[in-house]
Image (tube, rainbow, N blue to C red):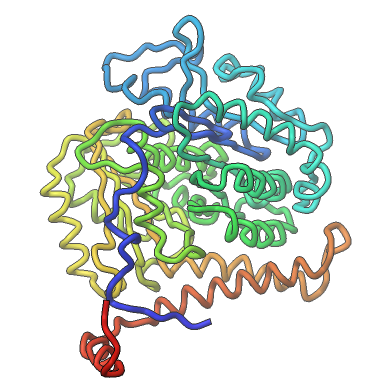
Length: 480
């Protein structure tokens, strides 16, 4: 397939404000609702610590304690709290979330923890057998048997939203539940809510973190589905998280808690514009419109600055210039790809804390001028900024980075090569399904890599060619 690249971007691509109102609600395995609602659905076996840290972070930011009571000190904390929380009887705030797993152990762990009192009983949906790290079990057998129960819980959350903007799926692509059932659920939600935004926070597997041999199968089969059914996929790479813990944070033996801490910081930053008012703001639809120039290329590299270890305090305040420099540094990116080896199609930067928007714009312009070769020239105004006055807990300023870079093909090449090495030997195929589905998924991810490479090599069409092309029309033709 060839790309016709023009210097002028489509009007609907960039700088266009789309979507209702300032408030947004979401349904997810973590769910949120406010003016607009977001529903979140997290799946997979490390769910307890993942939930703990994400809900701990946004709970602290909104002043919500573990019992769901408000203990904050600012009206801004409650202004959009309904994006992620539903106010129940007795001034108790309940997460708009559906928690899913194919085995009961995970749910029992959450219920018996201090987090358990925060969720409604109907938020928990689980099976009894597990998926055994098998994508096919999660997608076609055990997951298919449970998916209607999950959809009932999702519908109940969606009906409780004033204005549902979209869904947020948090899942791992290495296991069987998050990958197989997660993508099955995504497809079902797409069928039922075709005009709502579907975002996914997808944790990519790495042999550095897990020794499950079939992870490449699960990941490639999942990406095949995410290409069709996700509007925006935030790729959180276990390999990059592991490297950040080792090289940047100097942790000798990183735990899942350390990795999930980094993920929760990023998720909090990405959702900041939904949850708090700001000088420059964005919602889910606006983010998707600005970040996705071509429908298939919706896989983002997230990052965060400053990076701090779990439980540690930042020892000095950073300036806007330092934040911007760190944000674009490959060592702060949560996908194991070097942005310098690719080009940015689009970028979104979300700053938090008291700062001048003029200074933010100046610093970002300096980055674009200094590193102009790292940005495609045929998409104008391809850096979007949001500024929220409320910083994360424990920091005076912070920044979250979202990059749509052609360099992410490195991640897909890595898992594709691991996939191919096993597939050529037909290793473990008897545990899965029709071999044609494997071939189709392999071909699809290779096409995706090729598409990123074509855009990386593409150049803007010179103005003279465009003018010349128009001059070649027949004399009788009229331009409109």
